[in-house]
Amino acid sequence: MVAFFTLVDDHYVATEMSISPWSPNQLGGTAVCGLLARELEWHCPGDDFIPARFTVDLFRPVLNEPIRMYSEVVRDGRRVRVIDAAIIQQDQVRARATVMYVAAGDQPPGQVWQATRHLPQPEQPLTAPEGSPPLFKSGDLDWTGDFASGQNSERKSAWHNLPALVEGEPISPFQRAAFVGDATNLVCNWGTEGVGYINSDLTVTLARLPLGPELGILAQDQVAGDGIAIATATIYDRTGPLGTCVVTGISNARRQVDLAAFAEAQDFQTPSFP
Image (cartoon, rainbow, N blue to C red):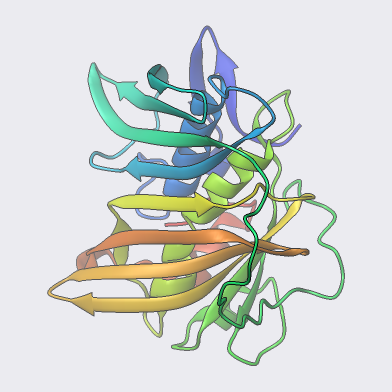
């Protein structure tokens, strides 16, 4: 089975798919966020709870070394449960996350304003996740698996069908959403010279979990100044929007990543994203 991690003696070992474009010694943020979501998910109160807010702090590089996880419940209530998790390497916390599980319920009566959204989707299902690249769309161009097509200043979206996060088990809807949420950097901060920001954090808010294996993300806004970029995207599936993703990017101009060149060098075996 193709997967981003294998579990060896209570430690997670990354496969090549998890390696960051920034450095072969580090892991990409997408895989890191997915792994943190998996750890938090162990403490889910039940199927009637939604991981309504998932926040990750990426304050140290997660190294291409065995990973130990830590988690604890910090608040357990009838309608809300809050859990913290961390990735530990070399006796240091490398990244941490928190999730707020909220009990699902009936919608209140009445009508509320909602934005009109056009959420692009490929006509044909992306049905082969193992080793297959995601699809990309820039502006009015067609969906494509060609990374070089995204080296422009157009609004972008990406469409995924992910393989397993951990070898031997199917990827869960929450893990899928956490992984794809980190690709906000890809759709919002990818320009004519590649990607020049690295994520320092990620927040994914979910009104519901994704249905089915396919998941999309669409750039909504990007505000940048003084080497800091605030990027916002909508995460969605074939039935409609799920929620919003926000990342704070820090300039990494000296190590700008040309994703087209990276994908070509990797022969594109579903690498992670910056």
